[in-house]
Image 1 (cartoon, helix red, strand yellow):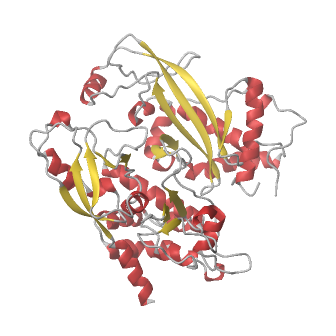
Image 2 (cartoon, each protein chain N blue to C red):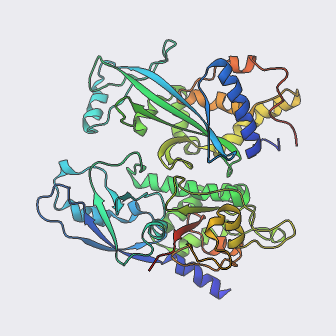
Image 3 (cartoon, rainbow over the protein chains, first blue to last red):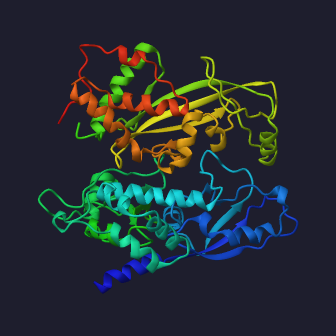
Length: 275
Length: 226
């Protein structure tokens, strides 16, 4: 369907206007100006912020620079989460541009993974794709791909090449017609105020009777508090790529069209803003 | 047990069995439950003493260029394996490291997964390079060449903190021959214990033989065919 392909493009090209400011406590030789950037929702912070680093390095001495890390309102930002997920989870109801603070010291190694090079990002990205395929196809599709096919997925993401990426990714979105969908749906549900980083469990897209499960069915099973009952006031928003899909949306469709390039459906449950 | 995969209920019962044996052997494993559900993980903390070795010129250069990072040589209490000599910045001192091991269940791979982290007693976490040097040299070579069984830094799925993880996607592959053999001559097999005895030593976690010789005849078999 032509409409569905448009959704894939809209998801891929989603951007978040961001303002990067240097942490006040960093030692600088002169005042650092803020740096503005449009961040791709589907990419990762450490993959797209080389320019940010270069910008701030101009006013700092080498000996004052360690591993760069980012923070929003006191919360260290996990680079290994897609940028759009970080925004929806922490800042979805705040004013744009998204204000991120940049640090070059005191890396919080109890909260953040280290990211010494882009090969670490690549390994993480490919690992997610493989895990997603383990759930969807018992790893059969990803294992049938060659190394160069895996590379194409990564290069597509790294270089923002929608066609290059999807030429390969479409294989990961196929399923036997008689099954009606993937074996299990790769998803993660994030809640900002929780000790647990995310909920990820086995969930089939189709019932034993052959009925398509919806987003609402998934939430009822995995995070019932997110669903508003009749007559109640809406406490939570269920956000995917910055929008609130209808709870009646079939989960299989969401998995095929609103997954991130890592092939996971990342779902954020955030408190409804009180005006 | 369906094929060589492990479902979550089976994981839970294997862990409980391992726990019973661990208590008997005082091996230190505990079960950390998630919010009163059956979901949880096995946990064990081990203190290791580390002996500083004389400095090797090449390592000294590396250590100097890595600022605060130090590399450590680990010596097992039972006499030590031969590891490459690496240096501590303060020579001649002995340090104690605290290793923490977690065994979680991966529903994506239908297998147990080993997570671990290490701290100095001052609370400084060890980096990936430090951890590599604690991997037995026999394993280091094959782990480095096979990224899918590699040790990588990952977010702990229940605690949200950085841990090192041994990648689970090949578990079914190496468990299969052992499990098939066990199923041919039907003897009770604790999947988790078996798995741990294979992967544990790779990251310095010993599984005493007594776990296997100490089977209670009255305890239920931990893995039964579906």
